[in-house]
Image (tube, rainbow, N blue to C red; front, top):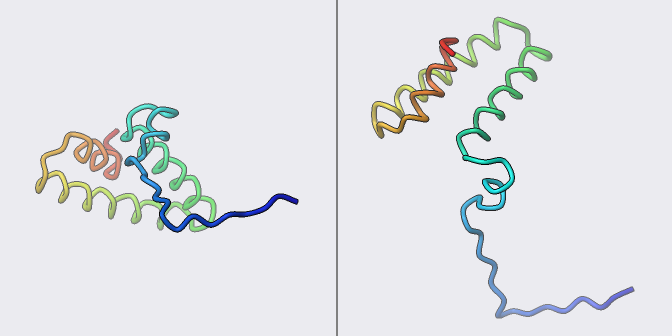
Length: 85
């Protein structure tokens, strides 16, 4: 039952995942949790073979990213993708 007002001059500024980082910690921890959750999903609905292919594909992707940018977290994700973690 409240009124809604439109303010056309208003702007919203998103500060690059700051609230998520405050809540969960470092952003790379969020990515690792997302990958682990995705793996559970893939195993449940597609089986181990497809999950293995998906994981190795991510390993190749993050290995390429690591070779290009040299970020340590990309190397960590690549190791995860190749079942080395």
